Image (cartoon, rainbow, N blue to C red; front, side, top):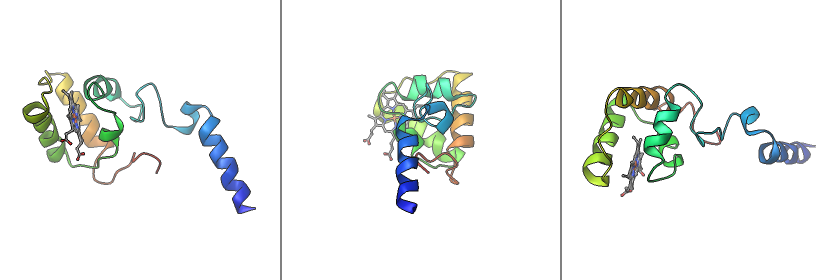
Length: 104
Ligand code: HEC
């Protein structure tokens, strides 16, 4: 019984409408909230957005990640207002409580 339930769940996840499952929107795994578009545009340019979504960081640590991206990974500094939009988005949806950890 349980096995069958899991198989159904798997089928649903594999073939169900992505929007209905709440993952894989047009911004990949990034949760579809204000700021997702900007974050996706800037952060998925070099690497998968999954690398971003799997983090759970405080706002301060996100700021440091952005500095690190610029100083060490050759990211263009992000201008305002996009910088604040992205930082707000990351701090809200990808904080230490990991509310949107992929596949949770
Ligand atoms: C110019 C290219 C570039 C852009 C743009 C970029 N990154 Fe990165 N990012 C990298 C590279 C290269 C690495 C791998 C660094 C390493 O692991 O040595 C990386 C790794 C990371 C990691 C992984 C850290 C870990 O512990 O594995 C995070 C988180 C991250 N980036 C966040 C972001 C965010 C958020 C943005 C958007 C604001 C962004 N990146 C935009 C180049 C970029």
